[in-house]
Image 1 (cartoon, rainbow, N blue to C red):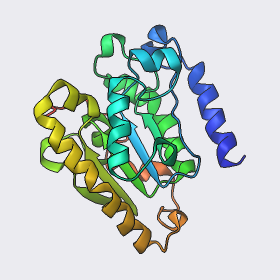
Image 2 (cartoon, one colour; image 1 turned 90 degrees about the vertical axis):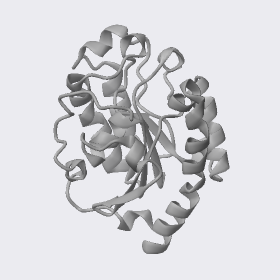
Image 3 (cartoon, rainbow, N blue to C red; image 1 turned 180 degrees about the vertical axis):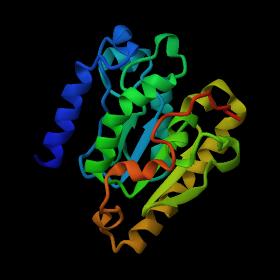
Length: 221
């Protein structure tokens, strides 16, 4: 199968998945959205109310702010692939639980593997923990880039955090403003070809001792 067919297959599997309790609160699954060959992937936490209704990621207030942030980085939504660590809405927008993260990891790992992004922007502490570990505090690493097996991982606050805590808004805007330079750096290192950046082994190698989700909740700060 080609990349588009694989992504469609993942979406079909997510739509009927019953591997965790989140399927009980699912109206529509939210597998992700964006070009199959995107250089940049954004990974958030989980669908909210509006996402659960529409089946698309980041379509509520946080999504509107994300569109503005992408625009400030000279990007459009159609340039990037956007998804979440869990594909169904946690009840009441609560944090995803370890068993839910584990159940959904197979879908996210497959998406990363086939899209093969050279830059991954993690939005919030749960997607950050997947790549940087569960002991890292987002307040210490936000806006910074780390190379993990050829990919650039950039930790960012979730856009919703800035909406709930206005004091964070300028920080989030400043962090996103640096994204074009990070992309330019990766383009330069890889001769403009994103296909050169990935390690030939399966995507699980990018999880750095996170084959299972953290057993405890992470602190936002």
